Length: 141
Picture (cartoon, rainbow, N blue to C red):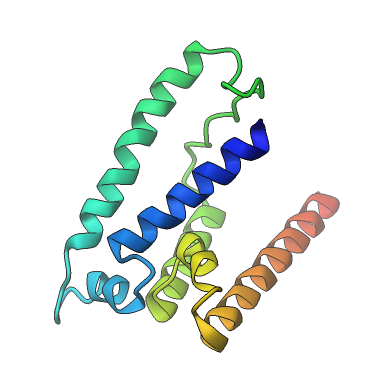
């Protein structure tokens, strides 16, 4: 049942990205072009994502387990440190240069051609490097 819910949720997420235009790199880069041809539509997509999550984070502490019987993840840390700032800067730079964040990048592999595949491979490479760096840091501590 959990896999079915995951598949349906992922499909709805991908469809939402497609309908909202977030798989169009020009639209995303237009949002980031504050002093040029600025496109504010991404603000509505971001708001549409943030509002349900605010509700979910309010409801989750009142429940023991999710609908599928799995424990809820812990709340994110509220510490602003160097790791958070560096990760945010790298994410933002990659998003601005490529016009994709991870969700639309995965959605684009079916039609993104060589550029979409290159971005996906670079994203996976970055995740591997980050994981290895974290393990080295823990081993050194």
